[in-house]
Length: 434
Image (cartoon, rainbow, N blue to C red):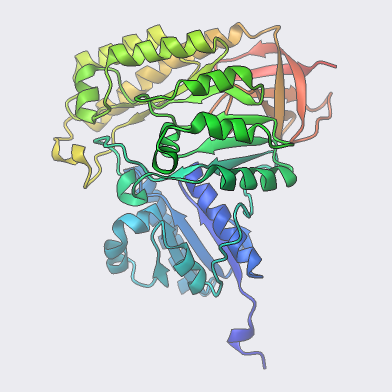
């Protein structure tokens, strides 16, 4: 009779939260595979590793619900073991151990070797860049730094991810080469703050030099920049963006608010005047650039006047891409000492108003694209459409280009030139140009 210990475990990694968590799950899966383990992402497995998010209330709720879901499966005998890692368990480990004690083990964000050991695997240092990617084969995230040194009042990330720590350029180039060898054509550079890159290792902001090295990687066609901070932005990055066709004319720069009073309380280190000047410099330096930003409404003390200032500014700036979130009151952050005094329904109403303004701006900007030709990459097929993106669009968050699949056959992961024939507020309809 076979004993329990001979049973071959199948490890199911479940990822919640942001692209940085996706990256961490991919590294974990790469390590497990190198150890000869059978590993899947969000499929059936008898051992489950949940990579949690602990950023804001909704994310925490989703993480806790996911843990409870798998604990029920364990109780029902459908899974044998459940491990929890990531930001939620980094931030709330003692509470979780008390509240959900039958999880086999909790690990923080920096305890990968310990987690691997619990899964019967060894951490292999030589595996730089070896990941099992979970994104569509044509793009992958490249995390260039961990942690954050910024003091933003509302943000719990430094509590969960620690201080800023850059990955050396040569390691990132090796990783990019391995991704390219596996068919990846688009690198999406991520960090809590790209602009800080290199300060710890090279004693200067070194994002431009990193980009100069990454554009040399054969097979990579697009490099996209996510999460830049508005203060201390290294302007030499714009020169590289202008000079190097591989670097997308795209920048994700979360600005959070524009009222000077709120910016000061948020500890953002900037003002409305400085922010507006910076954006004008971006547009002057790279006229083609698409700027993506995110805003927070309902921050403690946000008055109707502060909100009107924000609304007017969004109307004036005409961002190509914009997302809006309601403020989440997070313990152990600086802003937690303030009174969370904007009612939930007011927060939601303000977010809706901002998105209505943005929807109109997006529609107007999209109308201008009708008749124009763009290079797009095809991410997937959905129903009767192939879904693609231009260099001005990031996966999952931005506009998409829909091409009729009943009349045209396209290959996912390939690039095509298409002509826009119709435009809605967030989607473009196009035809392939021979």
